[in-house]
Image 1 (cartoon, rainbow, N blue to C red):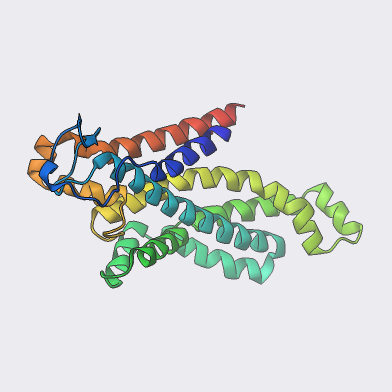
Image 2: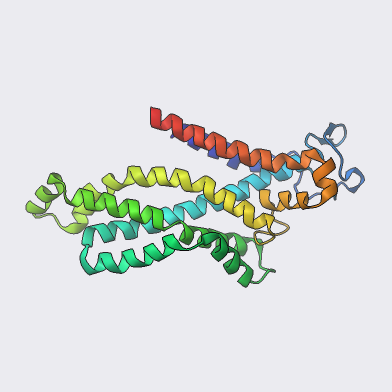
Length: 262
């Protein structure tokens, strides 16, 4: 788990360690490959002369914020509703479980595309980011719900919980002392799975032009330049966001696997 946090902190903090302003245009150095002169561009520049390294670092920060926010929303909402469902059972369980089954069965890629396309395209980048986090959080809520519900129901059937009820503890006290500790480990693992998934989802939406827009920078908006053949064929340094995304997901997966072994 520590390795995972190290990876996230490194990628997040690096967004403030850019060698240049990600929006500053050095037009005389447009579409230039990596070079270290005056000024120095370690990963070259894009079509309008912006530093690719600076934009990759800042874009990773935004994509990570989207992934963290959406995953946290899904875990909090899904865990809370799942815990209530497993604790109460009866008609409350039915009322919460049936909508979650619908959510789990929906083709969320198409739903996300349709929902984002229905919004105004000229929204502020901050509003677009919040909207994406909300949509992605709703899309991922069913998994945490099932985990929390199953963990809560298993805990409710345990001898310790039955003894707690026998001693006169209220449902809220049992929830705090038994059900939440029993649910947290599985929700934590689910959170680690959702973060890279939502980062990739944000990158995909931005790549399609449905995510954040200028002046904000994300890996998806940077990769959208690869749709132009001259960039795809002759400017290999423009693949930097794709390499960073692959490194992030692999390091996150390696960190979570290392945590499981420990």
